Image (cartoon, rainbow, N blue to C red; front, top):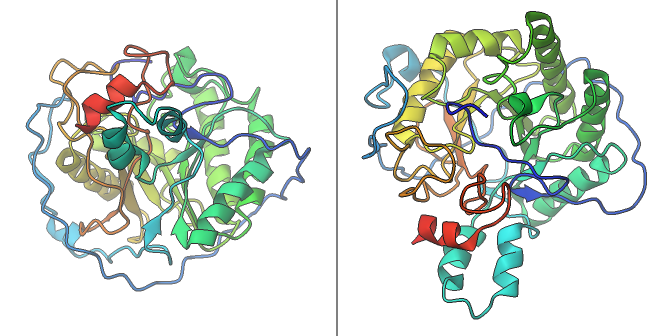
Length: 372
């Protein structure tokens, strides 16, 4: 993966952060393609107070950075986004960090890792191409969240040629297979409530594709958004905006527009900073600029991965388990920021990029350094 990209490391079938595993119940029925998506009904939101975002003490790698998240007049006039019905995010009970906590009751690092990482809600990744079990695996996560009255965050990560052949290479064998896999993924949503982070890096990191291949991928992603949103009115889908140290906002918005992210039929907005380290203030300013350039309905918002951005990005642009990083803001659906729908932990802190541990594995020494 290039230095500017997000670091999304996938290893085999236990990929990404928290990876839902197959349950061995056999083939699932594929869901028919949805051709349209209902609009979300406005829901009341009373956000909890959030401190104003401040610029990260560590400089960021990208040129032309904005100094802060102060909204423009046009931003301030936008209709405020609403939260899903449930006010709280879901912590899936199966993850590598929880496995480590259970297996190491006497480790002196355990209390810190358990309270500051394992106890927080984080995304569940689906990164192995497994069409026969994907529906039941997604259904299990969505049902688990519903049972607790909480919102799960799910990451479909199986687009062909993902990561331009880097550490996270893999995915479906072709776009036709991917489209069918997305149908089965959507079937698992079953009308439940969910936030879907659609294919990290698939838009921002598409330079390895030819123009024709890129157009085909973007068409498939637009279709995926329509199918996922067609699963039910409580499903929210966000598209890849890279991060503030990568493409300029107008360039990223142009790519997003080609992938259908400006259409309410396929998109609720954008996500940024997945598996990266850029400070929250920088991401807020960047996401607002991307949304302004994107156009589309005023309801579109943004979600930001704050899992490892507490100290901002390193000045040298290092992306592989850089030293001196810290946990970022606690995951929440109430950011108090106009146009910012959520702060999420999409990357699970402590899962290595491949330098402090094997790629994609939980590394307790790294987790402890982030959390203490």
